[in-house]
Length: 158
Image (cartoon, rainbow, N blue to C red; front, top):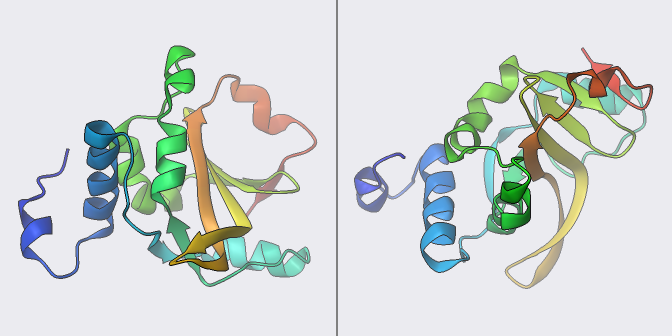
């Protein structure tokens, strides 16, 4: 895990530090009150695919939330061996650029053939008691079948 000393001293934590802080909260308290945060711009291949296929992107930034990070770490996934490691979650904002990207008709999926990270292009959620729409990380899980992405419902984003 990333050392949180810098996180505590700095006014603006890095994306990796924000994810780590949420994961530590979840591990220690079972939840995190940290508000959703941007993990960077929606990348160009996602933007172009959305524009060319009539998919509405809620915003220009990709967000993560404590609720969604908690969802991907839940015990039921752990019991099935589907939990993605904390390190993979922390690395995701940068590693996504090297991953394959697919669209399944509803969500975008980043995959390295070992894990997959699901992104909703127009996700409704409450932030500071206000309903907003975001391009939001939904969950992450292990890939059970490497042939999954050859199914007709998946369109590869180039």
